Length: 191
Image (cartoon, rainbow, N blue to C red; front, side):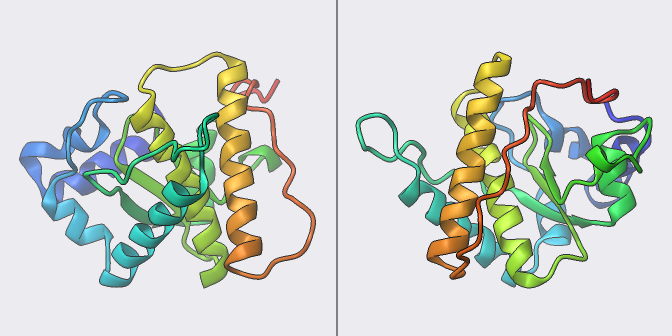
C-alpha cells in the first residue's frame, strides 16, 4: 500500500495492540472493529463526541432517491487520527508528497476504520474536513465494492455537498462551494 507511512501506522498500532494491528486495515466492507487500545489511543472524549455528532449529521442529511436516509449510524465508529502536513502528503502520494495535488486536509483509507485529518486545522475546519472523510467512511461501509470512475466521482460529489451543507447550516458559512476534484486521476502521477 502506501510505502513509508503505512508501515509506520501499523507499527504504532502494533505497540498498542499487537494481536490485532492488521484488523484496523481490513479489506473494504469487512466488519472488523478497530482494536480497543487503538480507539483509546486515537480518540479523546471530545473527538468521540465530535465523530458521533458528525455521523448523525450525515445520516440525517444524506438521502437516497426516495428521500429516505441513505446511511445508518455505524455499529463501529471510526478512529480519528490527526496527522502532520508531510504525513498527509506521504499518505496521499508516497512518491512525491510535496506536490500541490498531495496537499490534502484529510483522507479515509478505503476499507479501514481510520479517518486521518490534518492536525494543524482550526477546530471549525477540522470538523468539516472530518465530516467529509466520515462521509467516505459511511460510503465504504454501505458499498464495499470499488466503483468505476463515475461512481467514485459521485461519492466525492456527495461528500463535498454534505460538507458544504454542514458548513452553511451548522457553521454559518456563506461563501462559494468548494470545487469538486475528479477522482479519476492516477494517485501517483495525477494524470
